[in-house]
Image (tube, rainbow, N blue to C red; front, side, top):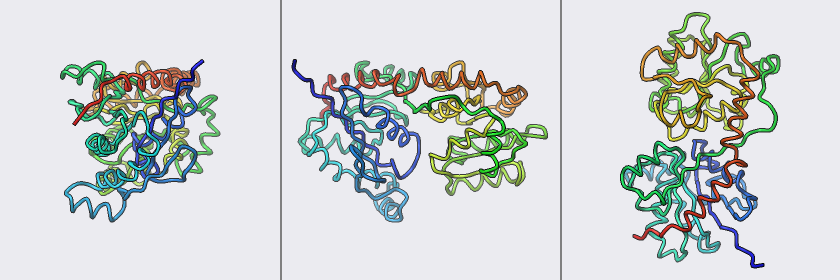
Length: 381
């Protein structure tokens, strides 16, 4: 019987190892989750970290370096673009040597270069853009589009995009074996290790600590509006020049002993999920929102804005409110925290994620997307 060659996919994301946003975390977990899938040969191309089997470190000028910031100003672009452009030629060398069938990417600047120079590179790869950002149509400089939520897929189809060019497959996530942690004594021990109060309810929000998009200022004000003894607020995420105004606001409205704002490595975030009583995020819309799944994995109730993407991800596991309105988040949080934690509900939330979003559950859909991408007509310049 004739052997069928596995589909060779190069998964490129230079931010892996440099920063932990949604697309970087997705790329890391996508590679780990899909490697070993029958009929698939997948390799990861990252910006930093050790070289491992089928994991390659691409030379680049990291976005968080002085050089990238300087060059970005010179070309009137940001340091993130510099990182992408600097990784292009090193990636080309790998492409010419390995001849992948598909290049799977989320960073549009790198994708545009792979589109414009495909003929000169001399390898007939297909381009598969993962639209987790998200971007809007037209998608004229890629061959196939990975849509992670129906809301953005439908926008593209209504704009005249071909249905065959778009595959709806949600982000996957690693779901640990076993049960979420609901033993109070164990949770208190973790709180003590992290320097968090043992005798207060904790509300956790994970995202860029800024008023932009994640709207952490709204979260601070909503927590501050709750009567004493109000819950303790933990904000985890990227901290930059936009973050100080949020920290100052929290210090003014919640007091020094009413909150913490930290930036911690991604692998440490799960410890904070284990200690929290509730998760919330004030962003009015998301490309997908993997943090919601992270919260559910640890059994946490989630208070989120009432938006089609959040409805798609959370379904009956979410508490939805109009977070554009003052008081909406506070009321939803108060209603939930009045109820005792239920181990049964915590287990139900984790199993919901396992059934819908684990890599084992989603691997067939990703394989179908790769096949659909190969069947798509190549977009030419």
